[in-house]
Length: 77
Figure 1 (tube, one colour):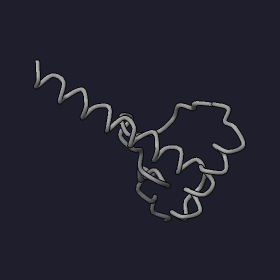
Figure 2 (cartoon, one colour; figure 1 turned 180 degrees about the horizontal axis):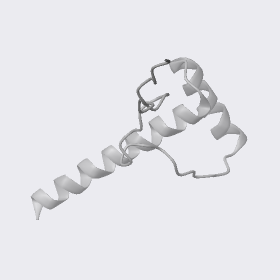
Figure 3 (cartoon, one colour; figure 1 turned 180 degrees about the vertical axis):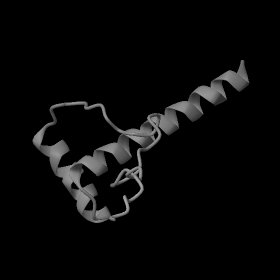
């Protein structure tokens, strides 16, 4: 007589899910001038990253700088 094989729960395959707070799932669209695009391309090429990554890098740096300025202004008050 044939023995039945135990039923196993199949594990999920693929990449594990990231923390929802760190996942970049929202999009921002903007227009730039020819010279701004040229500067952005130069930054991307120098850092060997995509235009999207270069834009994110600039945006993140701006937010960090703005946050530091805000923290300094709170200290002065």
